[in-house]
Amino acid sequence: DGGITQSPKYLFRKEGQNVTLSCEQNLNHDAMYWYRQDPGQGLRLIYYSQIVNDFQKGDIAEGYSVSREKKESFPLTVTSAQKNPTAFYLCASTARTVRNEAFFGQGTRLTVV
Amino acid sequence: EDKVVQSPLSLVVHEGDTVTLNCSYEVTNFRSLLWYKQEKKAPTFLFMLTSSGIEKKSGRLSSILDKKELFSILNITATQTGDSAVYLCAGTFLTGGGNKLTFGTGTQLKVEL
Image 1 (spheres, helix red, strand yellow):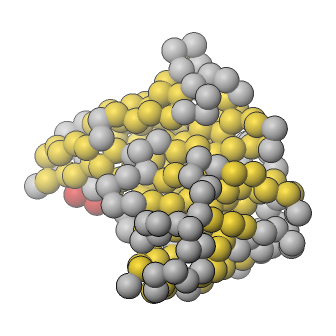
Image 2: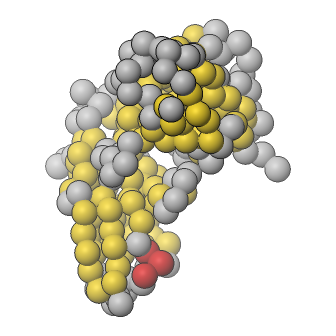
């Protein structure tokens, strides 16, 4: 079955550590997105990528980094520069045309301990 | 630019009521509007709207887009407790980096017995 897989589901990070969240899709989608969701809030865009080896900053990119070496994969690194990383992170993908819905992974809940 | 605003932020109704959720957006580079329902983790797709004035309907849910006034509404008739969720509206905007999918803050709907 086609879909988006995020891992891990839960992640704990110590202060000052970098952590990487995985996002893999087998839908042959061109575009991939990373969002952050805080309690009681909507989804805020961190980074997005339309094609391999290219990505764009979203609205809250500071303290995060991404790569897009393969079409299927769009990992997100939460760096130590992100001062408040505890949140729910969602990855999404869409086909190139805008006439297609976005599909979501099940999310990763990151907690700083 | 690429801003999406939802209202109300939260809403409590009784079973059987009809609710209308609102979503307004900026016009610059707008391509399409999407509605999602989020209960626990990943949002689930409800509707995609690209043409003005054409109602999309699925069971008790319906949605319409007004491209002149730059808004969309999501209607839920005969609400049930299972409709309790966060309803997210998103706009697709064409940017230099491709299609950017921007979400609003969501409307938290609670349906009580």
